[in-house]
Length: 130
Image (cartoon, rainbow, N blue to C red):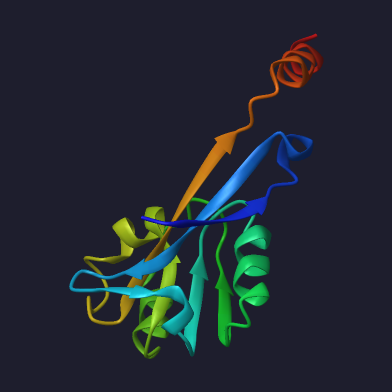
């Protein structure tokens, strides 16, 4: 799959976050540029890079943010059932796919890469450990 690039502020730009150009459901894969009017559901520690990526693409969406590793309650699921299209991360997709209708649930693949900056990474690790 093709990926778009967004610099992560994590590790002071020593890493990159790559977003797929496609969103995927149980039955289809759609180009992100053609996917609009959705609700973004995040249960990740820092959704800001994903929000910025979608905003930079001029996407029209609502955002429902949950804490990292959130256990979705019946109330949460009831609220989400009323949404026409839901976009989430692959991690949350795996947790929601058995609880929500598969025709409305999509995920975007996210990949993090550490840049090839050995000296920077060595210094960063030493700072964290000592």
